[in-house]
Structures are given as C-alpha cells and as structure tokens.
Amino acid sequence: MVRRSWVMAIGLLAALLAPQIAASQEAPEPRPRAEHDAAQAKASGEPQGQAPTSEAPANEPSAMVEPGEVPGVAADTPATDAIKAVTQAPQPVHLSARVTEKGNTIPEGLVWRIFETKTDNNGQLAMVAKSDDSEATLSLPPGQYVIHVAYGRAQASDTITVNPGNNDKTMVLDAGALRLNSAITGDVAIPLNLEHFDIFSGGTSDADRILVAQNVAANDTVTLNAGTYHVVSYFGDVNAIVRADLRVEPGQLTEATLYHRASQISLKLVSEAGGEAIADVDWTVKSADGKTVFQEIGAFPATVLQEGDYTVLAKRGDTVYNRAFQVVPGQPREIEVLTSVY
Image (cartoon, rainbow, N blue to C red):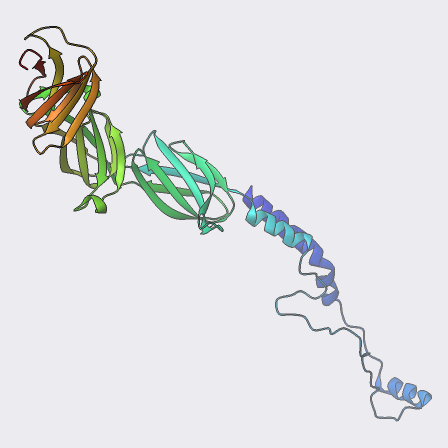
C-alpha cells in the first residue's frame, strides 16, 4: 500500500510538470537573417549595426528562482501534498518482549505504553498509544517515540524510529522472579493472614531505597528486573519484623523463607486460673524499655510480639491489674492476668 501511494504521488507530480518540461524541450524560433535586421532598422530610423535594446519595466517581477524550485510550479502542489500524505500516514509497528536476550517471547502479562519524545508544557511525555497485548500491533505516524513495557514489577524503556513500511521492535527486560515465605524459628508455620512483605530496591539505608512492591502475600511470585533487593517481612502488625537482602537473577526464580523469633499471644483477665475471660477490659502491653507496643479493649485480644520481656496492664473500671511475661519463639501462647492476686 505504501509503495503504491508513492507511485501515484510521483505520477501526479510528473503530470503537473509535463507542460513545463515539454515547453523547455521545443525547438527555439529561428531568428531573422542579418539583411532583414538591417532593413528593419533602416525603416524604423534606428542606426544600422546597433542591436535594439529592451529594458524590463521597473515593476516587472524577477525571473530568478530559488535553488531547487521548478520554474512555473508553485512550492505546494497537489503532488507535494500527496507525497506528504504518504510520508505522514500511520505505519504498522509490531512490538514483542523477552525476559532475557536468548529467551522466548513473553506470552502474556505485558503492558505497552508509547510516548512522544518531546515533553509538554508540564514537562511530561505525552502518551500516544497503549496496549495490553503481549505482542502489540500498533499504527504510528513516521517519527521517533519512547517505548515503555512493564511485566509485573519488571520494566524497560527504549526508543524506536518509525519509518514507512513495517517496523518491528523486541524489548529485553533482563528480569527474574522472587517468591517469599516466612516462618517462626523452629519451622513453626505462620498463618497467611498474619504475614506480608515489602520489597525495596537495594541500598545501604532506608533513605537510599525505593519501594518496589508493597503488601506482597506469602508465596506470591513477583516479577522484577535483575538485581539486589531489600525485603522486609512482617509477622503481625506490632514489632515482629525481619529484613534480608536478596539477589534476583535474570530468567530465574529466587525463593526465600525469612524466620521470625516471635510468637502469637492472647490476653485475658480472669478471677482464677483457667477461668472465663472478663469483658470490657482496657489492655496495654509495654516492652522492657517502657514503650507501649499494643493497646486494645476487649475480653480476649490477640497479637504477635517479638521475642523479649513485656508487662501487660489490664484496666477494668478504676482498677488496674498487671503482670510481667516473656515471649519466646514458638507456638501461640495464652497470657492470663489474675484478679485474685491483687
């Protein structure tokens, strides 16, 4: 189609220029002989032997043309308009991506975004196209563009120059995957609803790191660009936190289990050991340094605490009951506070 449009445009240009080209190729009109010139000069009273002179009127336009212009043809013609239409028509663009240079094309899960190369008034690149197809087929006018492709949390960007005809581009993400799990020291399982992970870029401190993925569930597979990542594992929502730096290799799945030295605990206020929990209790748990780490109102609250020494305060009405206890890694544990002790 593109080649046929070019042929039609060139044919139109040739048709428009044919009269001028034909006129320039006609034989010149022969000049009169010298005797005839002399006779005409004598009859008109002009001196013989002197060629007649002619001057163009002062307001006559110059016959000079700019370099590259064709005399008698306007700068913009139907032919040039046709050529412009052909060269500016959208062209087919085919996009695909691979995890590694020698890997197979990715069959699903890609998001493509195409941007202009020049920023707008807000300093942003205007998006001109988007596709969720793994092998995207688009139509773009000839020119240069920025391509961005995302595969999970892995992403890559590059430029493409769209020319008349077919345009193909294959992106290499250089990506791998990470699958995380956690457990209590001693291989005690953690309920799935009590664990989650945050993934940060590598760095020596939190100020150097960028959040890449948040609230990742255990056993989820996260696709990432190859590199080192800082992983934070949360057991519960108080102070049981474990950190690790993990390396993701291109084209490989990295699996890791992070171990917590912590335990689940439940609290209850009772009048005797093993008795029924008393309702409407205001609970406060403090760490060994006096910092409050947990507060709740209820008869039977539960939480997760890091290994260490703690004090629990149970307030009911104007009376406050307390007990010191210790958390060790292992199975869930119940902490009773007795009213009969006081």
